[in-house]
Length: 312
Image (cartoon, rainbow, N blue to C red; front, side, top):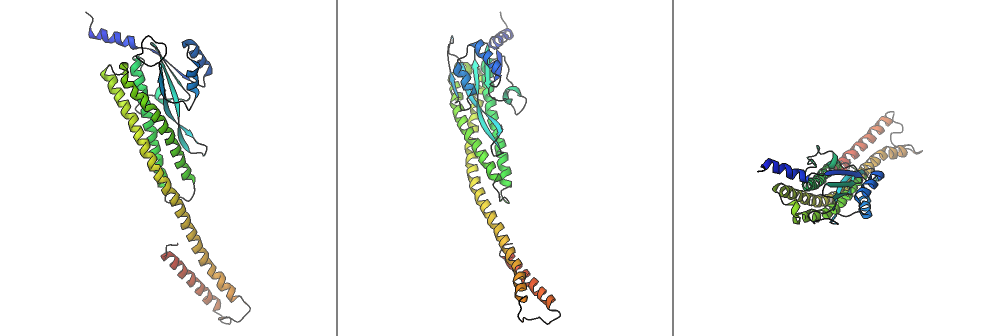
């Protein structure tokens, strides 16, 4: 009689596979993989197309228990044209065979290679179906981590809001809003694909797989809600920010106008007493001191008046 341990070991061995990861910039390796596995040209084109949508496909296979092709979108931090950090999304192509999984991406993918960071699940090559679910979970986690960074950046911009009179922070808000547009589109594209995995028996035949798929769906739904909430907050902050910049500029203009008026008093008095006509204090030896004191008093009274009016 075969023991349970031997049966589990046998099942694990049956599900183990070889994993190949390729970046699109490595043209030679990409061509070798395409030739070795006879991959269609459109799959390679999909891997290179940043605008590719999420989807899954089947092709020649003994049974249709698992899709041969799954394309999902993942987020990447980049520097925008205005010099602000923003996020874009790229497709990751997952090609499955019975004993091989091929992943193709355009950029470095930390949730594939650096699974010790950010609570990623380790991608083990002992169970093909669980590997795919783990990868999907990691993509959802990557979106949530990026959204946390967006939220932190948004708080930093809010702190700079009070005294800002330039548009630098406004460009930062624009970059975040642009990032959220990419996120919203990519997550809406990913969600139905992940949801469709619930109808595939291979992904729900064990309690562990069902739990991970359920958690992955919760993660992607949470990301979807967070994007929507953050987007609405950014819209409100953008409106307040524009109004605040205008208000701060008005405050600066009021201050400068008040200073101009105060500083014009000595000039007016000096011009009047400098005319070639008889004026008071002309013959008084203390006239200059008295005139200076009067001028300073008027300036101080003017400054006090503008201060009370909150112009200074």
